[in-house]
Length: 271
Length: 234
Image 1 (tube, rainbow over the protein chains, first blue to last red):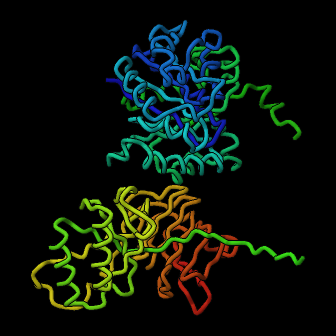
Image 2: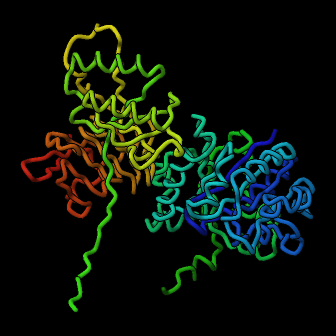
Image 3: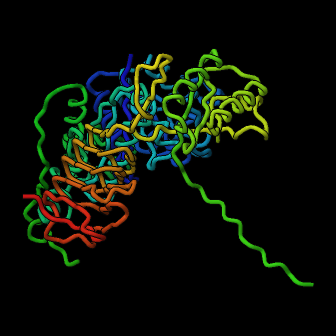
């Protein structure tokens, strides 16, 4: 029986889809069978980041409505044979999702895969709630800035009340993933520090992903950042985070930007 | 021809707390226990809004009407019904209520057939609510019956509304409203103040009006006449 993980945040644009793809690929690289599911109906992005956008035939809504069977909608990754994608629909919207449909699909996916990673849409409405409803674990993606942190607090409250696990009286495991961390800006006080974020959210830290141009490069070529350049700072941080999800204890390192000499000399541009 | 000025009809939502009576079968025995209670505390129901929860009994429309009139004879005025099939209801019966929430800790008054408990109507015991995890943004804690204690922080955008005092063993970033049921002696305590709003018995201060020097320190707030006073606890 597989584990269902929801990647959520509340705030949009903080790195849920990037993290879903990166963590999914990292876990698949360790040999586990992984499916990543896009719950952002109507604004799908996971297929782009996974580089599968030209192979989408059937999607999550088709399966929910019984138009297609699950195996018809699943797309296998070309680089990792135990990594699969269930894309969302681009032509419909979140109202097409039904609770029963989602429950059945998650149950079926749980039988076939070790990890079912649900990429939640932003917000707190139907799409986000259905993405988290049947999860065992949650990864809350947060940027170290005030709006993202407050929205994450809201979504944590919903994880503790709107999931099936919470309704049964159990606690859903929660992990905090800080993304787009810029140590220079944190030390200048322009961004919240890791300690600030942890103090406000009180959720165990899964990893700190540094701000990096590699993320955009990877999504432009349709490859998860952990596959595109395994040695880049974000990739290494995601790989560590994936190992922590699997229960390994790895000490947390706060990433520092490594600047070359020329960057240091000419780094400070006029605003 | 004179034109009549149209008056706007205002329909505003308001919530009230009501008490729920849940009769059990057989109805006759249950009515007998109500009688026993009323012998000891006559007029107990006269000032209270009563909702009748019919989930434990199956009654036809005439059965419901009979029950309501039997209760009216005893001074119990039923203002709403719960747990009944809409087909059994009609315009001459009280309306069907939905989505009732438990207001604070449910005080169960156990009506016993034998009179063991002498004394007046059960007074509301002072109670308190303990929350042992952080209160997250967007959550509202509503507890009119007494004090609220939180073992953790209260997030920005969260609200605590208590009839008594509020004690926060953590950072208060949201809103705390104490003494909500008219208790001007309630206080608010927190280990670190970064609150958005503090209020006691309706007198409030927003974050702007909280002295900068207090920010981030353990503080207490209390009502000094009609002024909300805030000071550091050292």
